[in-house]
Each structure stands twice: as structure tokens, then as C-alpha cells.
Length: 189
Image: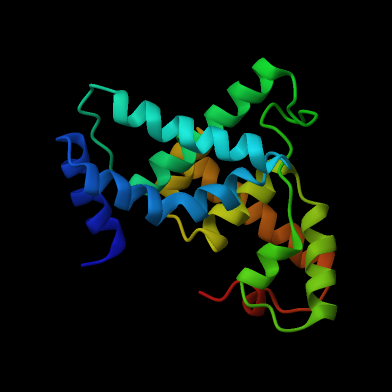
């Protein structure tokens, strides 16, 4: 059984009050949530608070919310919680395109297993030229391995817009990298 199916079973158990299932979901998704949340803020303390508040609210919620993808649901919920929390506290990084600043860190390249420091720098520079929405979709697709359906839900866009946005991001990267690195090497599929 893959993680996505295990997550759905854990979610269903958690919704029935199983504390162990809830704890497992928290442990299983905390790191990915922290990495994704770190794209919107550079304040780890407030980010940890947002993740904990998210899980507290989930536990306290009495609705029997059905989800198709636990990871996508948690990432989307965290994104909105971060934006709401930081707007309320007036500590959000400057907004661009209404979605918040998407911070690309060198750590993302290490996680992705890039081998060459020279190529990493070129890729990082090229990624910085993408729009925040393009950065976010590249991260969700290639670093979180989410489907277009999950991405469209998280980003609140339709399926075709998600595909087009990723296509435009890859096209921009190809142009920016101008043959320095084959895009296949960057994002093997």
C-alpha cells in the first residue's frame, strides 16, 4: 500500500477519534509542511505555531471532512493559515501577486539531489526569475511530487491552468538556462 492510501486510512481513523492515527499523520507530514511553509515565511517560530494550530484545529473540528489527498489538503490548509495568520499579525513578507512571497532556498536543491554546485547556482538563479506562482507550481510538482489535481486544489486554480502554468515555468527555465543544463536532468520523469 502506498503512502497516499495509508494516509486516507489514517485520516478516516483520525476522524473517528483515533489519537494514534492523528499522531502518525502529524509525524508523517510535519517535515513536508515545514519545508512548504518555509517558502512563505522566514520565521520558523511562527511557522511552527501555524502547523501546530492547523493540527489543533483539525483535532477539534467535528466535521467528517472527506479528502482525496491528505498531503494536498494539509499543504493547502497550511498555506491559507500562514497567509491569514501573518496578515493578522502584520508580519507577512511583502505580498506579490496576492499569494505571498515564495522563497526558494538552496536546501531545495540539496533535497532534490543536484550534484553540481555550478549547475545548482545556475538553476537557483533561473528559478529566481520565475513568478511566485511559477516557483510554487515547480516546487509542488517536482519537490512534493503532487498531481495536477492536487496542485490545482492547493493553488486554487483549475486543472488546465495548472498544466499551462507549469508548462510556462519550464519553458522559462529552458530559456533562462539556454542549454547550460538539459531540463530532463533538472526534472527527471
